[in-house]
Length: 230
Image (cartoon, rainbow, N blue to C red; front, side):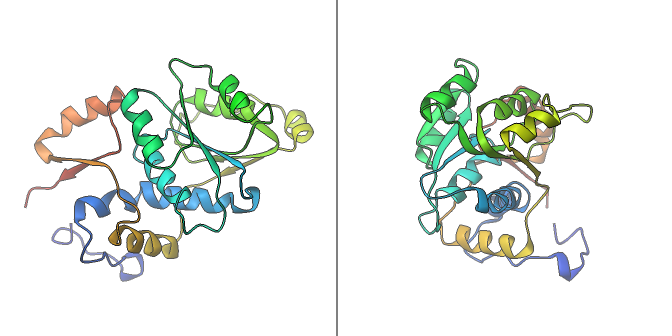
């Protein structure tokens, strides 16, 4: 896009030469959002704790799985992935999840409780726009659990929980809009080293209407990348 846009240098980030543009693109929104979300739960996770990533097979979730399961991390979590379909199940498990829950065919809250021996999840990062994903997270979090809101849902949605319930259970709810410049730099370096690799489908700009329809119907695994005509 440099041939179309003049930008403030303070908001630019060097992309490693070995990182193709179609692999760099997903980090500039989805990747940095998940890096920011994961940094917000650092103080809520210890080794062996349970982290749920809801929307694990999408553009944000599949990058979050790779960041969270990176062997270089100081803390290593038991990651439960939530999404739907066999393709996203395989992708999620391949990228580091220890278990997968299909929200269309399974009772999400019941399954999380089973996988955590009745304790509930220590942290949930909720990525989908679906309000049900937020409702479910509030039910499967453990006492003193933390929910990170990374998905953009409709503006009139309100959490179905009272202040008294929040106080009694000691829950923490945080919002994440995006990460930091330093996190962005680290992500791109890791991507250049192939430590984190986005799953992408690359399309010509002429396919944009078709892609919007696929997004509308949830027919996306990983991230779509659209090439601007030169």
